[in-house]
Amino acid sequence: MPRVKLSDQEKAENKSVRDFLDAIDANRPKRGRKRTVESISDRMAAIEASLSDASATKRLTLVQERLDLQAEIEALASAGSVDMTSLEASFVNAAAAYGGRRGISYAAWREVGVSTATLKAAGIRRST
Image (cartoon, rainbow, N blue to C red; front, side, top):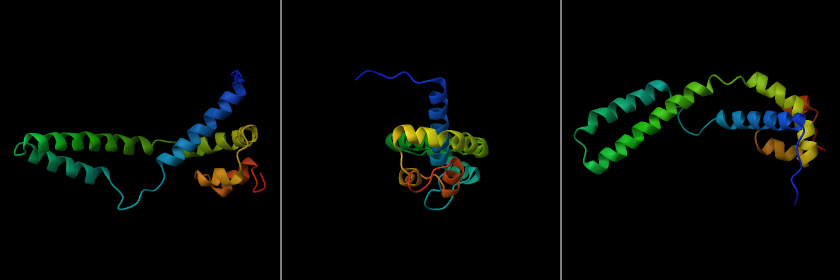
């Protein structure tokens, strides 16, 4: 099947939709108690305290946990810097054309987390 070359507008629409959906996923509430930088830092301090007494395999596990916690702190910091308003505005401008080209239904948009208000603003109706 030959590849179809996308126009600059289609590429921009694809990027707008992808960025907005990625932001929705990144900001989706997680189950359980919300983790804070302080609680993560406390756990990292506990890991540091127990490293010296740990066996080789336990030390390996603790080091990996510490690396995971550092990555989680970085993710928390970057999640707060996402401008959902501008991503949503860009999505609203692109979603109807993108969805129309790809045959994306209202139900599919909703299932991936796009709100009804955002779909309405984008001109995507239930019958679509």
